[in-house]
Amino acid sequence: MVNTARSVILLCCLVSGPLWATSTGLNNIPTADVVPEDVLVFQYFGDFGNDNVPDHFVGFKYGPMKNVEIGLDGRIFPEEAEREFVVGQAKLRFELIDDLAGCLGITNLGDRARSGNEFPFVVLSHDFGFLRAHFGGTTQKSNEGFFGGIDKTIKFLERDLMLRGDIIQTNNQRDSTASVGFIYDLGCNFLLESWMSFPTESGREDVVTIKLNYVIKF
Image 1: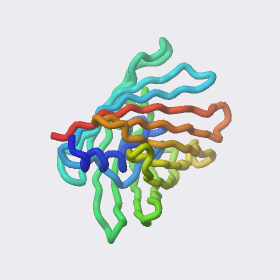
Image 2: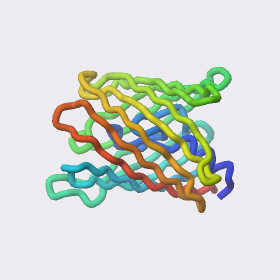
Image 3: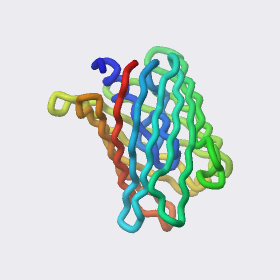
């Protein structure tokens, strides 16, 4: 795996939380980034809370051509009251002006009864140099809303460490979920992500998400 491809993935990896299918993004929001062409990312991620039984998922995302990303994710080891499901996602990126890109996408494509409604979205990402900013919105049925976030990449122990935070409207714009986290290049094609989410919706507790990515360049 070449360093260039790994660095690009480091700048793009990201999202589970309310979107289920892990479209490239930050913690809980998609961005205008996509997986580079001919790069495949295998992922494991889990959600952990004080009062919740851990939820586990595996999946992949792939760049079949420039500016296009597709992926599948599925729940594994569900509790008796839960069931397995598989959901898909797709993204199309387009360049606008210098350092500004846009993206049209959809996540959560699957069994609505188990995973909920599809999550279509549009998002803009701008690189200001000192940080990157992202803003977009979704027309998900009964949950239309906006989201935004920032990220900054620094060096830690001679490897890339991206610090990132985001916020997304939830519960039909009556609530929101904010999060802070990071993604770190472990070397040998592995990337580690983790973040903590803080939902405002009544009855929902704070959740820690841990994700491990393995990157393959064809």
